[in-house]
Image 1 (spheres, rainbow, N blue to C red):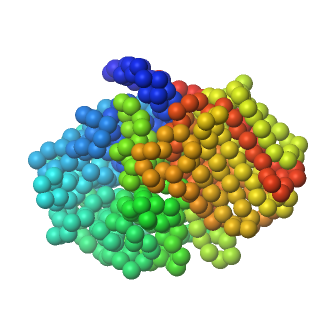
Image 2 (cartoon, rainbow, N blue to C red):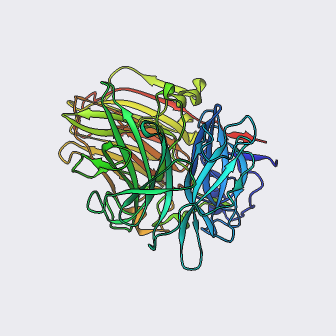
Image 3 (cartoon, rainbow, N blue to C red):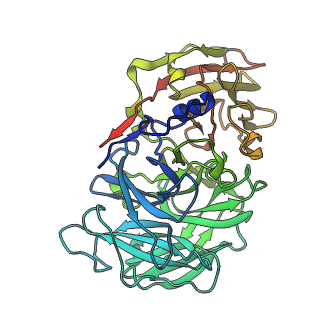
Length: 507
């Protein structure tokens, strides 16, 4: 296999214009997954097997813009260091290979087993380019994901006569010993069941008159969670391919529902619309299948972009990145259940002990200029704000010409991200809009984590109670990080900033 370098820019075009060189050099993340080259969008087929996390993704191998979709493949043992495995599923006479999921068929229900390995089975959408017919098909691997064979009986779930019929997420429902598929169908989710992954029976519809409908529904996910007190609830994620005026902040977004599932129907108990991320660059995210129950984790990852401008972002030679992997937790407040999306503990292994700064004495602000850690472009900031000592605060990062601003106002009870002067923004009018997130602290402290990686910012408020994910594209290296308040005194209780500057080289 050829040398693939994540985080280093080898064997890419030699641009001579200074602006192009700066973009080319600075924008590829170090610890977020990006394709070795060309176009990438939705994460697909996320499955855990024999100590390995498998990530497939929508891929066009012949250019940096969307084209006939394939499934490309990468693997990891820690969710941060990824090894490229090449393209696995190619378009055929049934169409392009659109989004879907994968499972470990431990009981060989589909009959694909041919050796000691439990088969991996991918369930995906075949999309015909002419007419847009969408149907569900299978592929399987009996060598732990190295090679894949498409099932000769495809499609296994034919189109019932509707335009949008895609993105199957399949889970094993233990109480009834059967497979469950949730499938996006325009303005609702269809639920099917099967004993063998090949023959599917319709069970029910969900959501036609529930939740947010500012765009087509896509990429569902269904799973059960248990909170810290032992309460058990089911969660249903639904991505929404909306336009510039869509909630919560324009373009692509992901909502979720909390409720119950009985093997046939999902019943939501939340009345308000709940969002997985209040930023604008987290879409089509789903969770890994088959993580052992003893691990006690549900892990989520999304595509870090937005369909409003995904095809125009100013990267060179590659386009598209994934969010950092996050845990999904069930939390209850005042009798209502919501999802939190905290950072994984595994991120701590990326911290560079030689490049970490801490402060445990309360401060009235922070001013790190020409800071070595900030200059890496890939770092984690953790800080605790005393909300009783300030009515507002602002966090900014940038250079002499460009900056990103994160602000919080107690009066408006919201966080705002301003990337209007963050660097290259002229490729989309939406890129200059403020990004807002309502937040009312439930205690006197606000704990913030800012995860920065060259061209992305992920903000975790109170360990994932609220999350904001956003891209930015600086022309020049950011050199400063500042925190200040117009009304506070010693409001910054603690802070830690750690470099996470580990490039990933695989052969």
